[in-house]
Image (cartoon, rainbow, N blue to C red; front, side, top):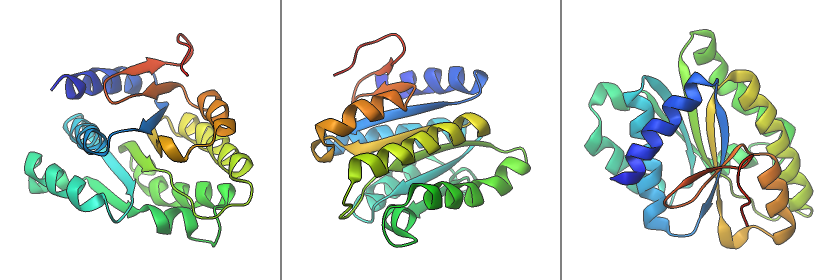
Length: 191
């Protein structure tokens, strides 16, 4: 399981560097599920509390595969949040409200000195200006991740991301994760 080993080493390095913000484009759903599970298991094995923000369609497969690899006690460190509820809690996709809501969820664990990592499948309904709205959200998320010193993956369905948004996403993330690799955006040109 090459990707699991790569995720293990990469996230260990990121935690020593006080966190990181990772962009993931979903191309293959099965590989995406495997990578999500690998990230969760890696986090729990490294002592992290893991927050997974995922949709109702993919969550059951991720939960099932994760439960097969973790003990009951380990699985208790994994928190699943419905991404529709998370991103639409206050009606339309609102970057400041989402960031505030995220902080309210993780702050008790940060105050308890728990190490945190997140995996969020970012989806939206009908947003009039998705490029601006998502761009603001990712800029706020990048700042929050940096301030909290956590590792955070933001996963997007590659086919749904408009061309105009791709550059903004690259600017507001430190790393780019593919199905098989993780690239440092400060050292690589990703298209």
